[in-house]
Length: 121
Image 1 (cartoon, one colour):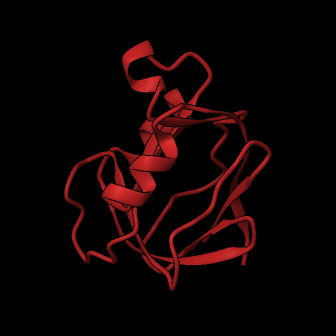
Image 2 (cartoon, helix red, strand yellow; image 1 turned 45 degrees about the horizontal axis):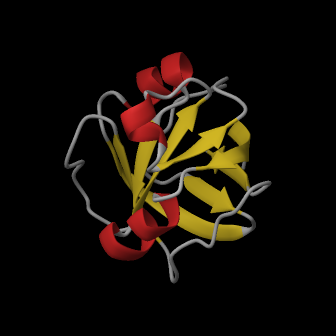
């Protein structure tokens, strides 16, 4: 298991937690997210991606493990350029949108300022 992405949450938009609860998804964005989107985002401190995100990999959020089931066609590009991806906790086998990463796990994450996000191959 090789870590291909690692970031820390440095800001939490006022609507970000509700997005996880109600829509079962979270939005990560690097510093400088558009203001109308930032309120729904977890802002991260890194956008350096060291490999390709693929189904079969894992996302770890504060040591909670999620299995990657589908990867939208723009996930890697958006993460590298903007620090932006949407993570959907629906376990879908096909990406619903180009910028969405689909994962499966037993619980929805409880993220906060300082939380750590890892992606492994």
